[in-house]
Image 1 (cartoon, helix red, strand yellow):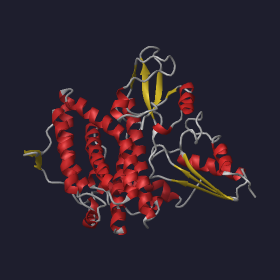
Image 2 (cartoon, one colour):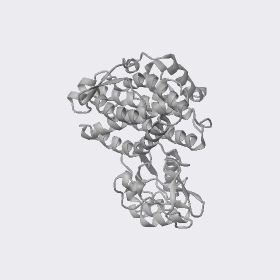
Image 3 (cartoon, chains in turn cyan, green):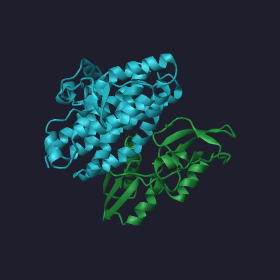
Image 4 (cartoon, each protein chain N blue to C red):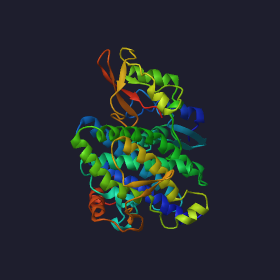
Length: 258
Length: 161
């Protein structure tokens, strides 16, 4: 088994969790209703907790410690997908992004059940139990807001148009992914994307929303271009801003403790 | 030189409270998972409830302090972030303590999560089964808000996991 490929993989997943968690935390104190303020603050903590657990696994294989990964790395060294780096947008964009992300995380963590790397199997099981609550929340909001008023439908459709091609970046393979597939550690991203499409497309359609796909037999063809680049460090400027935000306090006193 | 046994350590840690739900100890919560004693050395493994539980650092420090007070010269406390944690492992005593604290305990036997969540949750104040969830989240990661339609009291439920 290739440790360096596995460290890259765990780091990419952890970076996704860390950055989306921080974007979610931007709703703390600002969400449209109190329940959603609490929900997104909880989800932020959960996702950042998953980032910590994934960085810790990478560290055990020879990677850097989680604080160094989160607070000392230059933004260009992050390997999160571009999807999670965009500003929180309006609440519709946040809900659609979270829903598309939650379904992708479910598919990916489920796919680890057969992994040849035991600690990844165990951690994925733990994450899946927590994610069940995230998905109930985001799927419920998609179903309600998609079919609610004309204004909410319009905003939700606009969010799907923007977020869908970005979300496909969750399935951009990491460097050396082929080694991990050959070693039975992970499943191919194309397989995960197919499973994801089979979950998200019917849900969006039942909410009266049109994702950019065409039916092709039992599967779907994409009618949009996936937004790749994040896994190879080709980031949008938004990542610079959010990484500067989250590293700000740490950099005032590197290594400080209280 | 400490002359404590593994059993002594378990008993001592059964007195260390959860910082967020102080009626429960870290042993009640099944956060203390493993204790190994070797002369004046002690090794304890902790498993967080939810991976992102922000109380984990406080728990680790509290355990270290208690072990040092017992006289152990070499104290090692590890947080195992990979191992699963489930509400199935909460004891009946823990459920009773939660109820008296005003928190609805999770059901003892977990079916599928969907099934578990479709079952009525008794109000910890008036025992009415006429309650409903108010969202999927709560004041801490491990709890979720509920409302009682009978006594109109809002309460929290420990999330089944």
